Length: 390
Length: 246
Image (cartoon, rainbow over all chains, first blue to last red; front, side, top):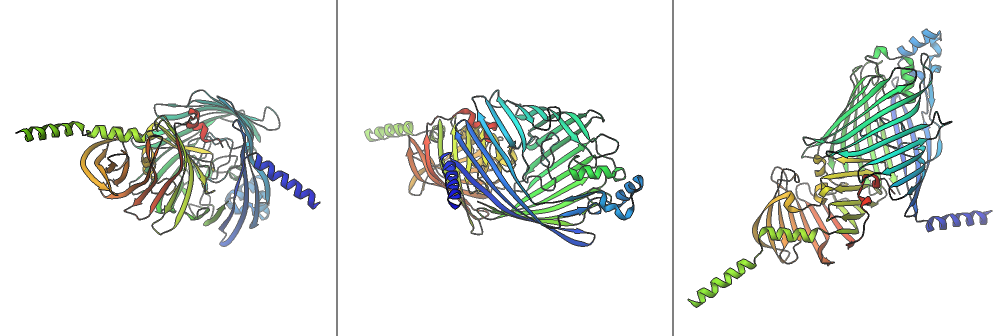
């Protein structure tokens, strides 16, 4: 048995070597302390990611990463830890559910996971390329949110963190050096529920822009709407500069088959002062959001926690100020403000490199607002992350 | 009388032989701007606190440095990050495989440090001196034992964000040996030393460039490990869609 294993391993290594495969990866530990009901709860995640990428020849390349995520500490969350109690009681009353069991109305559990991600093969021709497999399709110009990106979930409190790839066929056609059309099909149970998308991107008057169409399946939890909606989405985005400021905007118009159409718009700007202070601001409008926290329902919260909707409120502002404290350390202050319910999340963030291949992030999450509001519903928390690359 | 006449003739010939400031700047540009290039290099950053970080990269350029592509290869933390500069550095895209996104840097972001080094994006962009600066020849001075032309260069409104640069260019090689960068408060901010000048395919090339951060302390040493000029590079390499290739 040992000989077979050794032979297989040797064959694997020789094959990788012959194919010019690069192997890299990282280990990271993320520690989340969080106050719940005046008690400090803690979750700790160990993640190991192994990346492989290589070229079979000039026209074919491939990549894949394998991930192991191990969760410790608090990994099981009940309804009262995620949703305001008033909302739970109101819902329980409406369906005749006993108050002493409202914690059973909703729960989620972080479980250890082992998965292959971003495993894809790309073929290149003169003007075309085809990528097949799990891949990132990062659409949109926004930093905090991307209304046009219906492929990935983005955590607004950690927007640049890894996103899971989606299984898709993506065909790209380069019409000119700056003009490109891509067609995507993301595989689901059948043709009707599979995501299909077309995007045209180009450059005009020093602005990069794109127009897109997606047919997608949206899944909602709720009693008044069907749980699944076939939706047509029209999208557009643009980025460039105006009067020395960086500017970008992104909009999506969604037309679900059985509920009212709605739009989401994001607009942003940034500037770097001479002393190195970087400032950014984004405004986000979600027509499907509510005007006040009084209108947030149990199902709104469940959909938010599940990632089925992007926000509870209608109007949001996101600001960021980042200053290079030293060559290897940045200090940032992020403020996420829900103008519809008056709540906010302030999160000072320090990132620094401890060595050529070691990065660290320290964040404190400071919620502001009443207990029924989007951000005021949570308590003070934080994140400490250490990443080691190899 | 005959000696005076000879002296006048010699002075006139010398004046005719001397290069005008425009001609000197053109020669510096001609030396710097190459049809295409391909190479590898490293950046060693020494912070003001004395810590060291070393980055390695591949670099490509074509169309007289109008298009430049830098691909970081080490350390693993930044491997795969790419910087694409088009239109002589007027358009800069930064791509990182961590997010799979490329970002167009607005003009204000060009003064930001590249990967924490003492070089900013605008320091690394191409372009003709005459297109980005107005310049005055201030005389000749010796730098590192070499006679140099000394130029004061004031950025044009669309040029870099510095208030001025002082450039010392070697009188024989027409390559910069030292550049002083003054910030918008007219203080000396950084000084670039170019050393180990080698003639590669007829172009005098500094194999080592040291940017010393006078104001903040620290320095970055950029060393060229290999370089080839006049190589054939596909124009498609210098596009946004190429940034997402492995």
